[in-house]
Length: 516
Image (cartoon, rainbow, N blue to C red; front, side, top):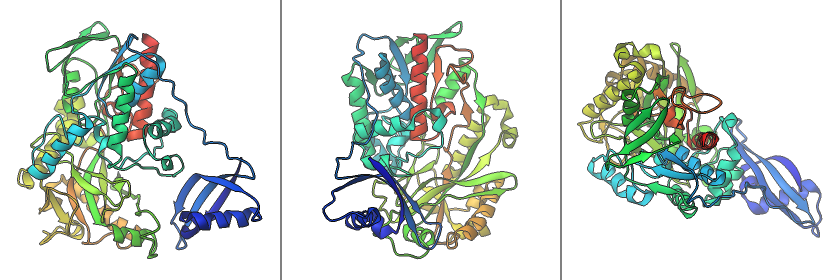
């Protein structure tokens, strides 16, 4: 097997017949030569006016092509094995459970939300009826927030673990193989539920347990260990190893830990708005006016600007996607983005957020390590009240937001509960609003056409990451004072996104194995 690096036009890259003809010519093959090939890497380079697609091709001539190397997972029967308790079945919890199977440990998962199919009714209630179930929503339930998201699989956290293991695991459980060669792979919100269900079935098949609609409500410490925990049904669970993978929106867990005397730390985070443009406009900007709508994928973007000593940047950009209500309580507004696998919706949306440092939270110092959490909650409630105390989101046309004027009308939106025109420049904390307004002007210079009243800004994008960190040792993954507690994933403040949280969950399972 040999490899060939190419840079070709989009027509060639995405047409199998044209690509094979190009490869034959490049390799000087005759019509009698048999060419076997597959994509090993694909990346779109749209920096220049003449868009190129960079390819790495694995090929052989007149010989068979070896199969793509993939991880072989050896899951053990663990019904009678030592137990590891995992709180939460989002990405960190799922991969922690799967890694337990490989290590010969029995994962017992405690998940406050419902299974992925049952969650759908509660998501419909949020969108259509403005009713938020605090335990079953876009954040809580099987697969966590990652189930109903774009399914982005790109991460820079390569040092956290083996990213390839996570991708191979997803393919084994039903994801398409494209994620193995795309430079910025994604799965899509319409495909993720079946994959998550398949992962659950693997855990159960090999003797693990998953308890849905079961909420952690109490911890029992003895010395430097948690000896048991209780759930809302009154059951007491003795434990020797506890992996905490509850996600960044499980605020009650932070309060529980704080009240139990388990050390927490405040950490920087970010908050802002969702901005939504027509996807065709983003395509036109990013593809330099070229009409590639039917050939290239919906265009994305990445923006960053320093304003008054703070970073303002795009977060979780969703090409061809939807804005969704991601609140976890009735009296708050939180918006997030997701995309289907084809990214074929008519809108593009992205979080545009401002970095928030601990010095910005001086007015909340009385809350100690929960200062950022209280600030976050206060802003979400304020925006909820501005939107009429429903899941309708306060919004403003982009240029109107920057100019500080009320929007007489708003552009169409993908946000199902609907938008209500409000002066977001006044509703948001001034230090956030002013930096956002300045950054949008600069973004318009970087992407001509971006700064336009064709776009709405929608509030509030507040759950980019946890404002709280649950500390742990870098080597052992144990909490510094609780030797059998392993904080994991986004909720612990150590990961961001599906892949990094999955890798983190695997490391925590390995750390739990070391103490059993």
